[in-house]
Length: 340
Image (cartoon, rainbow, N blue to C red):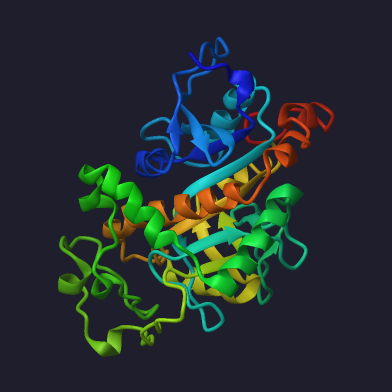
């Protein structure tokens, strides 16, 4: 049985697809924990990535959103008191714009921008007639050790390119049963519809059949060249809320006004109570055209990026960080919004 005191990196997933992707990239799997807190309801997998011992947890089946993520983080910190840095890794909806050529399978990493910590809660704000959206709360930025590693990894990728394909291929070679769901789908299924094209609610079938794939309905995008990263990595603001973003017009508005790159449903519950870096693989475009075909691969690209990030951080740098539970106990309290 593994000793919970030995784990300094906490990794949270929202759904089982993300959990499976994370587990497939462990360099070594450890035994189940020797004990957990009495009221801890989480399921854990323990293992090693690079030189780091990592504890991975997933939200309960069928539960989503900010409060559920906060509850999982709270229980993790009770059972694994030595956790010092956190990662929220999984899938999200992209917000492509003229400034950001975001495509399915790409990765978006939360990075501080324009006075924001990298994540903002877009259902915790206000709209005023004829004015831009205004946020009314502030979420913390990721810990410096993660932001420093992110900057280093970004420079490495720009100079040398990344090896996410190879990482995913190696993982799938070890677990062939995952190939069908977690391999990269055919690129022709990556369709970005014009914002005015809405998927009919009552019609079943894939978008190419129900909505059509005529050129006039799609946003024209050039094929990525061989010397371009594919998947690409994007750094910036991730929008989080308890509701799933499926509105292309609202997506475009927040992308234009707030420079949002991605939408998801859990990170806002973590940033002030579980300081972490949020890493999202893009599985759809936050519009009415839901695309589950890309979820497995998007989860893999996010997990592969997270693995590269951890491998850049020396273990002694993590050990030098304050334990998250101690940092919280010295803050305002463990029980602000979001269930702590």
